[in-house]
Amino acid sequence: MTKMNEKNDLLKRYAILIFGMFIMSFGIAMAIKGGLGTSPISSVSYALSVVGHVSVGKGSIMFNTFLVILQIILLRKDFKPYQLLQLPVTFIFGYMNDFAMYCLDWVHCSSYAQQMICCLIGVVLVGVGVSIEVTPDVLVLPGEGIVSAFSQVTKIKFGTMKIIVDCSCAATAIVLGLVTGYGALGVREGTIISALCTGNVVRKVKPLAAKAAKLS
Image 1 (cartoon, helix red, strand yellow):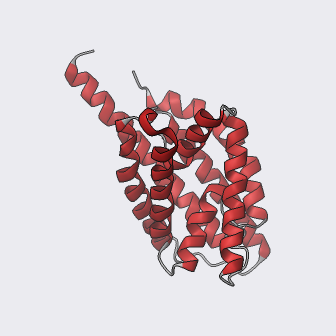
Image 2 (cartoon, one colour):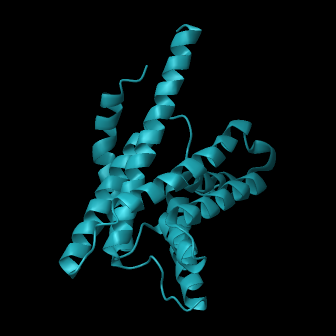
């Protein structure tokens, strides 16, 4: 592969990554609109946005920036310079979240059935977004990066550590909401549905995403 082809391939991979993040942001926004709880990893971002009286995107930026810093602390010399690209990606993702919330401002649920429909649409969109995001294999988002870092340091398998981190995020959101008087922010039955079903969506969609991407 020539240098020009390599450059074009890399640009294509990052474009696919950004597109996946864009789809994910609409999934997160739809889940928030449903009001039945967000995904475990998004629950802290949502809680921060409510408690801090900032937008969902800014809450996401704050939390994901913290996750990158935590990776640096955990991995030290094993933290690779290219992983700092998670920081600009974090800001892009945050603004995408705000854009998605703006686009879905018209969505209002007047019944539990409508809430559940929004929740399920959110789960599917997040699953599709993750499938697309991981296809180019160029960079992991801070949510996956922190799981990998903890797994590397503790020698606990990635899958097991993913469950631990998800539970820790949900617990953090609950505690943050309770101590500030807002209740269990972002954690409800939709959080459980997301935890149980998103992986299945990813497993179904990822092969199709990889085929459609046609990466060299």
